[in-house]
Length: 304
Image 1 (cartoon, rainbow, N blue to C red):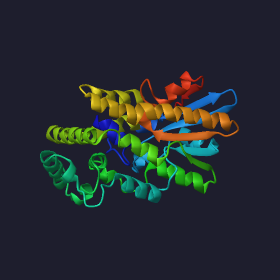
Image 2: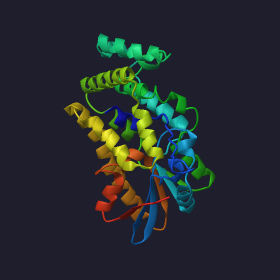
Image 3: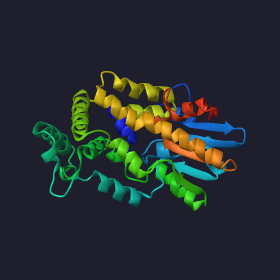
Image 4: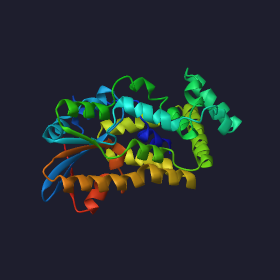
């Protein structure tokens, strides 16, 4: 469950690199990128799966991605806004009303567990106390990724570069739409989801396991199936509230993304568009790439 939330948070993922004993090159160098070519009768465009971090293992684009980017007239990421605008909007949407604190709205035992996690990571509860439970949950997911959030994330780098190269820049969603998915549910359901996230972090710490390293390792290897399997396994035993949250966070958004890609392509057949979203949006049977296939597009994975 936490893997899904992490993939949609503002920044994600630690890093694992493995050396291939049968080759002088690393798997990251030989793996295919998370890149697909989308063609119709009168248009060619691209889908690129990203990770929302700034580590060079992610932000150094493979030649096939560079080629697709250079051929594209327009770049559409999940959100068009600048980092400054995004930060201001997210904070504004996530804050509790003045005079209300997180410990006023969640059970005391849950707050104590959260405080233990936060303080054990040398952070202050001041970073959590002002937020709604759903926003506190997002903040919680970022703790492990902090060492890899020191620069500009890949998505924003692509947008900045597109602007420098005078390409058209767009967003497939609005920040309000994305935050509505992240803030899914009633107050009680959001508190329930925060409690599940807290318990999972405590369990992972006890077991010394890292979902983050597994996910990014699969991303670097270009293994979309393993990436999907690693997160789908998280749904085993999920309750109805968690499943409904995932439906809002991923499945329904994928449907909207595919519809808007179709609208973009059909309304601008002369333009090659480079669509760059979080890699999980292209994973599994309801991925954006599969939905576009179902709509009649030819969608091919670009091999190196």
